[in-house]
Image 1 (cartoon, one colour):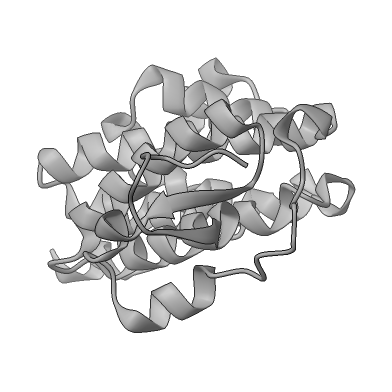
Image 2 (cartoon, rainbow, N blue to C red; image 1 turned 180 degrees about the horizontal axis):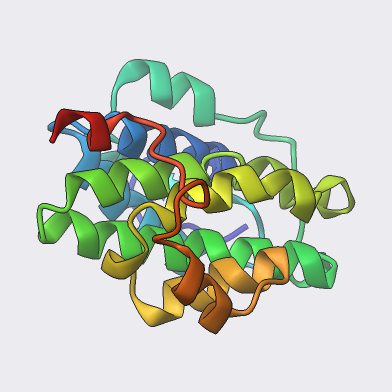
Length: 195
């Protein structure tokens, strides 16, 4: 495994645990949310470079996250992890959704679209658990989470909309027509009752 930066102290981490923790932070955003998103996006650069879900990050990168998360994402240094290139097609698709989702969440955060950040964070938080075992991913069961993202559908980029549709086998034009129909979108956090 090569390091993210030469001559720095590094810590091996599980990138999918970091993704999970980041998406949890988006569900309940706070002052650290932007830091987590930035770290996850930078982590993907290293993940692609090293072709592994287990990567070494400079300790200086990890200073911005809490001690609980540091404990959750650390791995046994002898664990080589899974090669990104060896993931099956569904695993690759889920990994791409995580990367795109992190960038989309960062974009939404910069727009102060908190409802969309919370909804998309909720939608994406289970995905990292399926990257290694993509055969366990069930698109029909994921439809509930998909419908949570549909609550903020118009705020999502077309690329994010399409990626979510691809995961569940939906047609974006049909979702475009249905997302406002009563009973389709799920307001998991109760925002519609606050208006």
